[in-house]
Image (cartoon, rainbow, N blue to C red; front, side):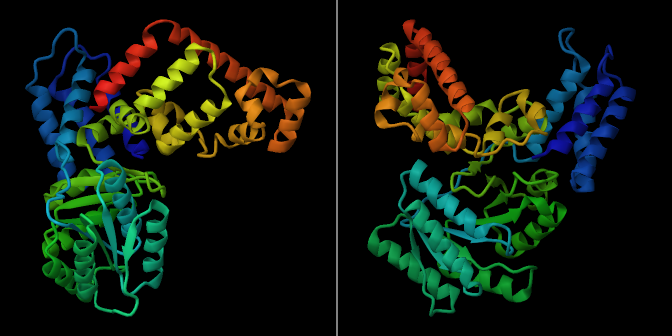
Length: 444
């Protein structure tokens, strides 16, 4: 995500390295390169030009402290303006209403149906809501089936009427169903087309008028770049939607849509999607995205993802086990499961400042834990609970059962022993208790 743009911007800032002060000449040279980087990222020309003009004005008007290098000041100004360009601050979704109605719109292939499932899952797990998904794509039978599969996967009910070919009637019936059965959010998944046409726009307009949603979200494939921005403008002119959802940000996207769309339609980006997993949805924070674009990582989002999997009571029990040196492979397996729930491993590592660039050419498979899990699951319950009993013959049997070799089993057991010793050392002092207390306070 944004790798090319990040590299180009970093090269641009190097022009100012070694300079004693900011001048009109070196700023102009730097910003000429920044503008090229933005255009290469498929950012609208006028937006790129206006952006660099604002940065230039602020850079030349800034007082450079002796402790701050010109390149550092330029990074700070560009960071702040990138955040402003993308909306400045996060925008919440409107969930008022009984039930709250959310209308999903966009072209076919943009990821509307998948996003509808992700949003339902997020509202259910993080907002304690009871959502109902409404299948209103009457043209693509696979869309209705896909929504049903996603609903079953996340434990959310789906309202569908295969015999009804009127999306307005289906949407209204779904809202009625929600009122009767006590669902507090209805997410309406609508039909898309391969391109904008009059019939499509008329239909989605009729649905919106009939159900009067609390929130209308336009879902756009970020990999389509400037075309995504143009499509968003046409939809907004007709629908006057409330916010944008950028999908497929984990793909080979140049970032132009994320940087241009807010200015063109004057509507906030509310969510981003990265990957196919139902957990792969994030609230859009402009300042955090600016951090990522400039290679600063996103440690706040990483901590939040960790907190979502963090259970205070479980952690207390774990601390007791560590203190008594009773941490076993069952606990280890549980910790792996929690890490996997946090999302794509490469994306998680990229949130750590300085790590994203170092690993960008590495292929970090989401199945990186597969062999470890296979080895642990090939142990008997008694062996998992008592790692010290894993002698040579048992290790050989575990290697055969897990489809690995004896060296991999030995390496895992050695790493486990070292991890257990380190955790025991931490629990000996007040470090772990203090960490748990801080995490507990942050969750309140």
